[in-house]
Length: 311
Ligand code: DON
Image (tube, rainbow, N blue to C red; front, side, top):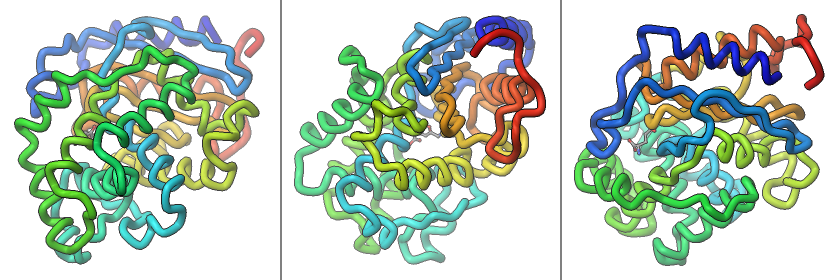
């Protein structure tokens, strides 16, 4: 496993086309695209890393996975009255379907759906309390109390997030937000501004692997459903392509991070800030494609190849 991660990291670093760093959140625009990290946390808690796996990055939309777990914990299946479970086939920040579908977003991972998810775990608490709950969840999953939010990134997004404000107002006009638009956006942008290293994110992702020590956080049935949504919607209009190339559930963020789950086996975090045309990490996706090919790990079939050495 260590050799494989070293090879993948070396190959990623040698790739000349790193994709484009997201610039619409000003605080993220200056990130050096020449960074690549990967970490894998096995079901038993063993961790392997390579490259810049200990450099913190903005997890952005990867946070939507933790938010979904919290929202489901709060209201269970009632969530599905306010947000769908179908891929949208459109960009993560698209408003197009909201009008046609009466303010019910297609899924919890596009921005509109994530705003409803945030509104759900925010219900009845202050943004500070809700964000405290989110941080507690992430820290418990990663077993790391040093994980925090980057206030500058959150403020930078709140100051410029006209599209998200539009989505939130549109949701509110359909009665699909309980808290005020300002509260929901403030909470959502702070949630997206959680920073983690690949090592921390891989460990936090173990709550979606069948790890014995994680059962208290999310039930087995719920874990399966979150993984299913990651597979079908986790990469927005690039979800089909990611499933085709990688064959494992994944959730991306515009900070360049991707969390990938091999159910029963491992949680993998990969990070490289340059994005492809879908707004997902370019090198991260390529690295995961190589990883899947080399290990044979896929939810769509049994491993056809064994990697060298013990895993
Ligand atoms: O709402 C936004 O636009 C960002 N805070 C998160 C978007 C994101 O990460 C999309 N993922 N690839």
